[in-house]
Length: 79
Image 1 (cartoon, rainbow, N blue to C red):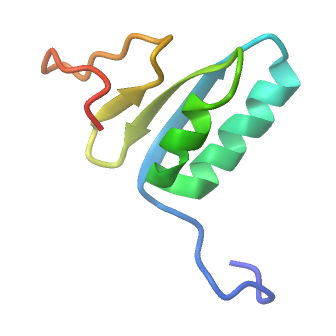
Image 2 (image 1 turned 90 degrees about the vertical axis):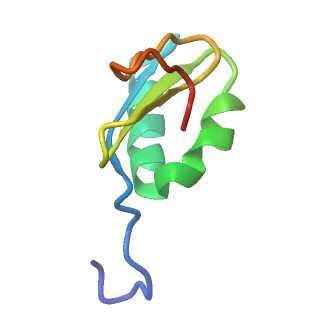
């Protein structure tokens, strides 16, 4: 944590993966989403041309509408 900040980064997510037309932008978006935590879902869904998959600390997965995500229970996009 930076001493200038009065908050801790989110810790709900283990992994954020994005695909899209520009690798550097997808990497930046994934980094930002990881820092945002579970609240990043709406933002990720709004990114035109990019699809995302998240894995949370409990092993659950979520994916944007353009990406299939199976958490082993047969559920997708379940949060």
